[in-house]
Image (cartoon, rainbow, N blue to C red; front, side):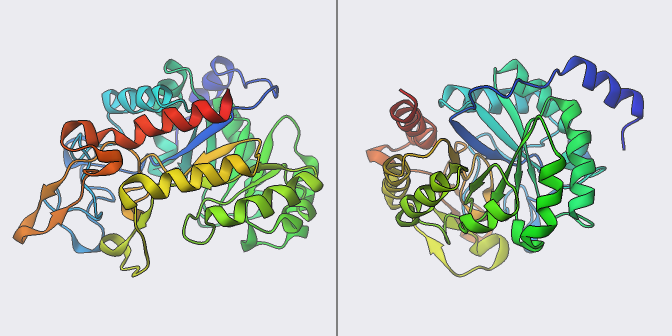
Length: 321
């Protein structure tokens, strides 16, 4: 855990953003990747018995190669890519104080700020996460200038357990990951997001956002390019990318639902194959093939690597104009 003086200095330097007009396009970001050179061991790339760098726990392979989320150069390049794609808020996965994601947060905050991005926190189901602990953690994270908090797995506690917390908070927004708008309203949340592109397809967005408007909540449905976690988690269900058609369909459904915000799942969740970070086809150990984005919107080779970032520019512009 970093010393108190460091947190105090960050609180003085990173002045929280005013709760004015919110960012309209946000993206989920994962700072949990590690390499032996930067972190002493592989982190996350090696899940389920894979052997990086040739074999990794993903159906895809990053175009920039196996990287560390501790690498300031990589962080800067990633934040610049996110900003150039028309996204204005990066939602960093956070797994509690003292976690690798927490230790890297000052670097992420600096890179986001340098790229002109708002920083938000994705409060994951870390050990000991209770409403009381969440309240303390929100206070701590505000020292990084964070005012938007996305609570994954909100149903881990009853709505009544969250309502007291949310009633005491001020100067922040808290979004519940749920498609049950009544639950979010009863819990005193400011809005909802769906995150899971398998459970919540585009066909659910209009219903969810209509209900959210009726109850005065911000609707921030989550769009994504597809889902494939077979190699990382053994989950058999796949949502194919269909050469970009899946991403287009989810964005189109989101715009029809007239949300206040669109969230993107994800920039770099390589385990679940939801990433839009540049990818490149590769042959791994024993001829195992890793997919790139060849075929997306008719692109092949190097132009295909950035296909999803470039397509995000188009959809973000349509949404925000």
